[in-house]
Length: 268
Image (cartoon, rainbow, N blue to C red; front, top):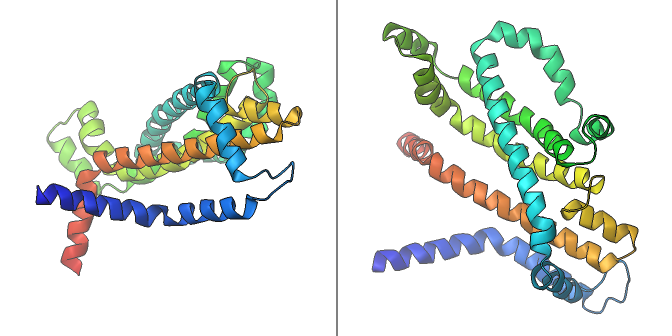
């Protein structure tokens, strides 16, 4: 019982330590904007009240936030699969990676939003265009980090696997992926942030539905308060995604964090 209470107490302190700055900024915003009569910068109290009414009571979470989440999830999943596959191939085949490097460098230098006009011509304004651009823009950090992770494996491991005739599938799932997993997760976290940004941009120019479309529609109709609610929801959405991803990373890479902690403790 004492152990459980201590664990909850430590968790509470950790949460407070990580949230003190956002809480302080929100309180400061609340105080400074309380007497605001500006149309463009309404009081935080009004923004939060309207956010509750539009996104919770009126069902905006279902009509606008859920479609955004689905698009992001599908596009990000495609980016992870393609990024890991290409990263593994290029990591194991340096000559192939070197041959394709000018092409990959040129493609990843182009922002996903810059490809919007071309994607609109080929895919239209529907879901395919949005998912394609999210996946395309998110893929590159995952691929590059996978290449580094695969190449970081000691060369002796390749000889050992060849000696014991380990199959290609077992090499991939039991050797290369665990070794590259920390790098892959690091690249995936960057890719997730890129995916959210691209998601908002493509929704602004696509068919109705989504946080990006809601924000642009509110701005075009001079609904400033509604536009602010969309940005608040988008910020909370991004924060929640990052927090969930960190929990997943901590659970999957628990062995890695334990090994790092052990190594640091031994060196200290």
